[in-house]
Length: 483
Image (cartoon, rainbow, N blue to C red; front, side):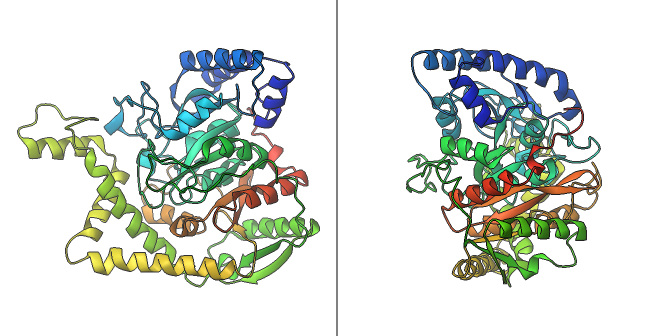
């Protein structure tokens, strides 16, 4: 049962081969048995899951149907879930039980999805390795000595290890696509505004976007269908019709114009990954795609711009965690200033403190124009590069990451080295574009991903290309040893 995809589960439930309750019990037992090796979950919600599974079975018995009705999933632990701990991977929110559900949680519950628990993550989604969590590092099921990627590493590790078929995740600078690449999954960051951010604890408000992590493009289409849509509670949500993402999966790729930026194949890219990307290009050419070299000249400025904008927004968003209303509060404060200082000093980990300080500095008097304003101008140049490119091509293809997953602790003493691993992913967040990572092979036994980018609201095109690629390759079917 644990090897089934979301699509296979939907068919099995529809054909009455098993019940949602039976499947839920199998997966909960599997999580209890195997997750101690991975540390991919922060909270398990057994009672809620069994209650939802029984309700889904009853709905099916009454004639209801739906791809997500009775399907087990988990939520990254920054989606608020009413009455359940929502920690954001931080000591600051270790005791926080959300008083309401995030819109994504509400929508998926209404579709009949069964919530098995909340997955581990980098603290406040700040990281590329899932090592900054207050609850400890998550391990990569392909090699337990390596990172699973971050910040959605808990969701990625759990799905890759077949603890569940799919999970929600978020992407601020690559935090869906990079873990997908590191764990042999398909991960999709939708267009900014496509999925509601209401009830999703913010890191950088102009960059954050929720999306699905699953084993196949077909499963991502099913989960995104349940997540996407306009939300009047979210001022950044865009009122754009949601297409049937599964309906276009079978479309032909004949004549599809794929752009390959020359800047992607620089000295920083592992040559073994470059070879796998070229193999992926050849596969897509066999399916009728046309390849064209393009240029994204301002890509080189993206990392410094991102690491000004994201920390600046984080320093503002995280100012609410002050020990007064909710979250961690220090013991016996002497006065209000002492309360603020010690509560924040004790509640936030080193990476979060580092980014808050960088952001506060960039926004301070005398430096705003020099740093934050200039970074926003670069952001516009990055977007303009993409708009020019999409006048010539339908999608853009390249590596998801410059290297395979590194060993646990290997980059802890050099945060900038970890930041540089985001070089291919952050441009999509700066421009607000949809991006997808899909399995493309292995280097030294570790998975590698290929990234696809598309114009705004063209998630269906990305899913179509990935699905057609997966019908003709078997990388996505490989399972880590022992799971």
